[in-house]
Length: 149
Image (cartoon, rainbow, N blue to C red; front, side, top):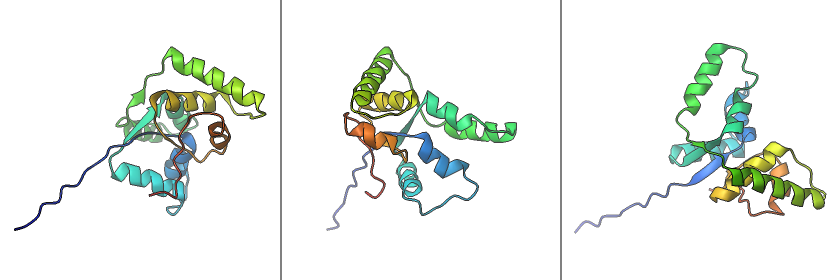
């Protein structure tokens, strides 16, 4: 008798920060062995649900000089769902920024908004931005370690 092995597919919800998308898409010479690039590629190949935060999309589109390139990038990101920000995201971002500031940690308001968005949805964040490591020490944000498969 032939045994049937069922493979369980787990879809992961996550947010990918601008720093990783930039390594993956916008560099002239992409380092295919960069651990963040490899990790993002793995999530894409597994068809995990990568969510975009609007400000990340804006950051990625900012500075694109050629309309053709802008449209190509816009088309590429169209397949990723956009997280709808709500009042609690902005409130959590302010709370988190105040808490971190009291601990001597400085980061931009956008980083705190991204962190709050991930925390409020319980989504891990894939980022190469070291500011999030400092934020993580004083919050419930889950960061994806690119060395973990």
